[in-house]
Structures are given as structure tokens and as C-alpha cells.
Image 1 (cartoon, helix red, strand yellow):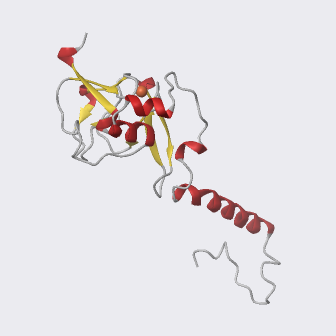
Image 2: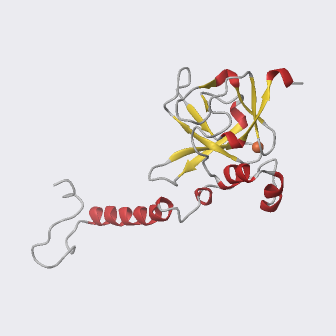
Length: 188
Ligand code: FE
């Protein structure tokens, strides 16, 4: 039986009394691990709470963010909302230019690394600069995902997956609402 190494059948009513210490330690460990995962799996614990908080160069109060961002930008950047696929501004845009953080203006992605991922969200195989973005583990779903945020203001951008094209084989799946596009012709 698959779990025979974890649960030993009792024949004398003295359950667990002669379970080897190693097995009891393993069982205890599994119970503790399970208890720590339940709040994350069911969204009871914000993904950020488990990660060490680090200061960002651009910081604002929640009230200030709400005032300066549109409701959609605020939901994505500050509340980690995901916009609907195919119903967002840049998912099929191919124009030459750069994509900047809608929260602080930092340049994040370029049209040169943008590609059609077919998912309905803007897809990039690489950010413009490796230090422009930060990542952390997101436990909102039933499995861990790598969340992507702006390295300067901490605004949530989307997620990165390992199913992108060469040469990085990464797919930065980014919400349009988190970005402001600046056409190449308009660059200073
Ligand atoms: Fe930013």
C-alpha cells in the first residue's frame, strides 16, 4: 500500500505505541507542514506575509496609491488582481516601444522581447533589465507560482512561467493595466 510507510495498521488496540520514533517524527513533520500550508492554499494568508518585506525606492500609502492610479491599475498593482484575458490593452500590441510601470514609470519591458503567447495577456521572454523586476513565491493557487513585481515600487505585474520561447524559455505573463506603453517615436 502506498502509505504503508506512514500509517501502521494496529492489531492490539495499542495504537501508535510501538511506532518507531523516526516515523512519529515524520508524521509530526507532515502535520506541521500541512497546517502551515492550509491558510496559504485557501487564501487566508496573503502571499506577501510569508516573505521578508523589503523596502522599495518608491513607497506610498494605500490612500496615495488609490488617488494616483485608476481603479483597474490599483487592483492589479496594489491588490494583485489579474485582468481578464484578451480584454486588455496590450495583449496583441506589436508596436515598437517600451512598457513602463504604471505605478512609478520604471522601464520594464521592450517590444523586442514581446511575443504572442496566445494566452490573452502580454507576454515577454525577458525584462529590459534584470534588476527592473523582483520575484517572490505566490501561494494563492493550489501550487506555487513565481510572482513578478516592479523592483522600484513593488507593484504587482503578473507571473513568470517556464514555458516561454528561446533563448530564455521564460514567459513573463504581465497585466496590461500594470503597464504604460511609450512608442519608440515618442521617446526622448
Ligand atoms: Fe513601479
